[in-house]
Length: 268
Image 1 (cartoon, rainbow, N blue to C red):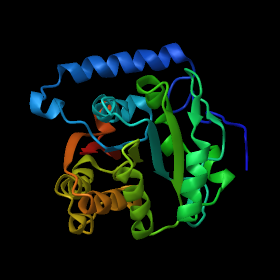
Image 2: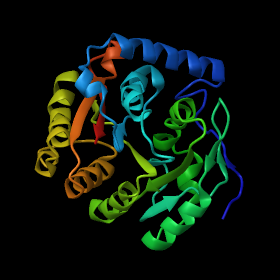
Image 3: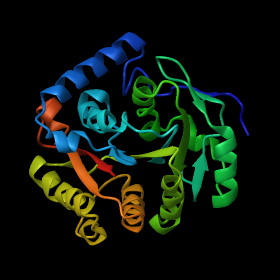
Image 4: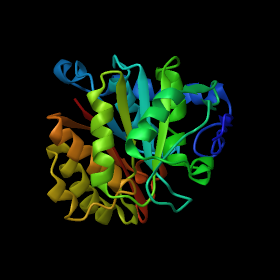
């Protein structure tokens, strides 16, 4: 077990190195969000969980921020960030056994006692290599620091695992009113814009309707296990789902020949 700080491994790559530049992004995201036309009814929703993308902020930051604009109203005291392992193969779920998590604008405190209790109940280990460079969870941390500077966090990274194993953990987390859950996933990768929209439509329909069968039609999300587990948990807990934003890397890059899809959604 480590008692150190989880260093910010992808700062300067996926998001800026300096706090002031990160904050400039958030200012821009918030101004863009305020220009979107959302009904008062939707604006009043307080989510228990969200799905957010995890690419560079220039590509997916606005889409992720859309979810955080809703999540910031949460009464929860603890945020659990769950993402897929991109760099290290392992089986099961790994918890972040550090004391703090570094961000450009200051560290976040990890809720170690809660993590220990969770690990005992759900048989979670610690795979240090899974955490060292994982961006799916790390790119969420500056958002968390911005919107929830005093909240404690837990980072969970899953490897080779079935959604049926992850779903009971998400359900247990959401049954505790002190928790809000952040599921990290991008959508399809490196198709033409036309092809990407076909694949991504299956993912969007599945989330909006809590329809696991729609995922089987061909949803190519890199965090598909997390999305499946979240939909399963939402159905069991009788939560509603709402899509918030969808776009692709082509919106930022102008290149529609090979794109990545991004979605944000909330569960309430």
